[in-house]
Length: 140
Image 1 (cartoon, rainbow, N blue to C red):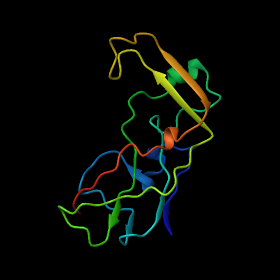
Image 2: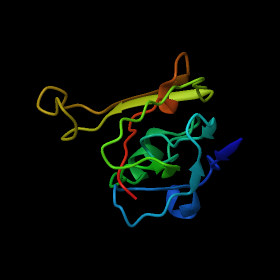
Image 3: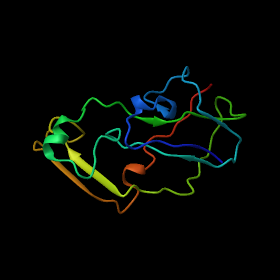
C-alpha cells in the first residue's frame, strides 16, 4: 500500500516532498495509484503543526499567522480524465492525541462578533485536525 507520511515536528516547508499549498496543474503528483487502490495519507493541521499541547499563550502569539493551506499530495489516479467523477471512500480517520481550537481577533467568518482571543488545547475526541478538509481533482 502506498502512503504519504509526515513528521509532525516539521512544517510543510521543511518537508516539501509531502505536499503543497495551492491547486496548480504544474505540481507533480507524489503518488500514482490505480482506481480502487487503498492509500494512506497523513495530514497537517491548520497551523501547519505549529501548535503543541504544552504551548503557552506567549508561544501561541509568536506562531506564524500567515500559514497557507497545507495539502497532502497530489495523488494521481491512473486512467482518470478531465470530467470524470471520482468517488473517494474514507476507510479510517485517526485523530491525533491532542486537538486545538482558537479564535484570533480580526480573522475568520464571525470576526465582528468574536473580538477577544480564545484558544483551547485538549485531548482529541473526534477526527479533529485529521479531518479531510479539502479534497479535489485537477487535470494532469
